[in-house]
Length: 185
View 1 (cartoon, rainbow, N blue to C red):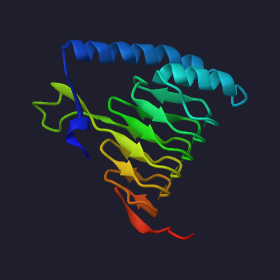
View 2: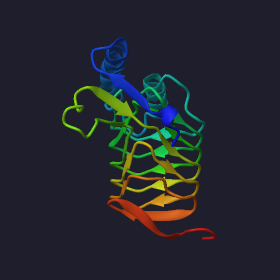
View 3: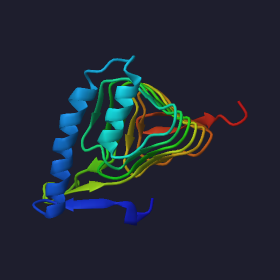
View 4: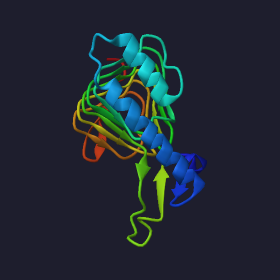
């Protein structure tokens, strides 16, 4: 991971106040989004685009409810499907490639606090998440900041991904580990 992509927000700074404003904005948008149904495709798309401050790729589909801390820094490719009850914390960038399927109850969490007790309340830190093309993230998986999930890979249900996933592999467990290659299947 490129260390320049790590975002650090010290407490009591203009940057932390801006992040707090983004959180408030997201907390106003997501309840409206979450009152929509599966059939409200265009309204879901419009509110999601408002939340992320950008345009999603063609044939995007999201089933509410959906949860986000600030919504900004999320980029979504074409033909992406996000199932219900997902949580995206995007202090740092979340980039989702084309043809990605994200199962229910999946969490993509870019933010973390320092481990040292003396530093825990000093700043918030974000590391980006990249989900490359044609990935399937199964139900209940958690992806931690600083991770890239390689093209065509599968993250098994309930897995916790704490490090990069090579392309064309199946990973599972907590922490997730490579189970096998899925090339040529």
